[in-house]
Length: 299
Image 1 (cartoon, rainbow, N blue to C red):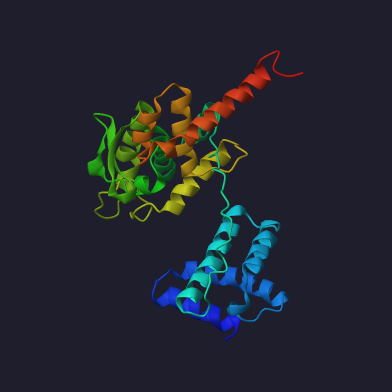
Image 2 (tube, rainbow, N blue to C red; image 1 turned 90 degrees about the vertical axis):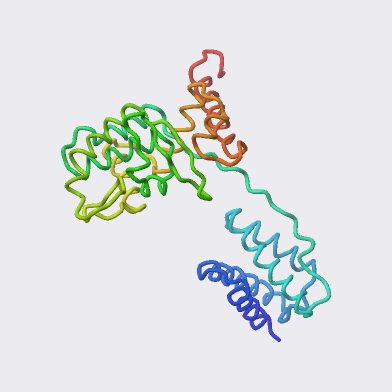
């Protein structure tokens, strides 16, 4: 049986038995096509001919190529899966990928705007009387004030928003619920939107806070566009998204002296380890401020 057919059988196994998504199957297929081309270049046409030396050389080849670390790890996982399947099907007696050396992906620091940049983004639509601008202004104020995920914002129900007490109930990952404060600026923006804009947008009965102009739920894509439009109006030359405001929320709280555990609860992180990445950001920013401000910091 040729490598091509062996890969075909493995992908069929992933589709039928593992029931992987179409996108995942496409990714695996592309990875294994790269692997197959590498093997063909060595004159190998059957998985039974592959040795640990071959798989090790493949790892070296893709590691020195123009692939991201994420792509490399995914490719290695695809190849490892193929060889484990070959072992299970008794095509081979030994897993040729047992010598793969795991590669760690360094944690990427999320990009947070400065306080001044964040306020400029938020205030870009503040004075607009347009109905959709009122909604978008309330949205960006809400995202920065609460640290909510975009999915939590677009699915927010009126029943979960208590402007009188200044709090909101958010439903996060794994259906976990948390109650977080809503700041005074966000409360004012939401009250303005709910009384002056939302009634005109509501073409039918809906309990959702943020609506589109058809009266349906605001989509994630529309929320992204709202944030990007505000950034453009503020003339910010950086890529931003609703998640950027979540990063800003956490970073600015920590820079202001907030306890890490409190920020963890506000963000809805299951582990404080996830939240700790923001401490790296604040430490990095302190170094930048020190290097540019202290007279003896540089030569």
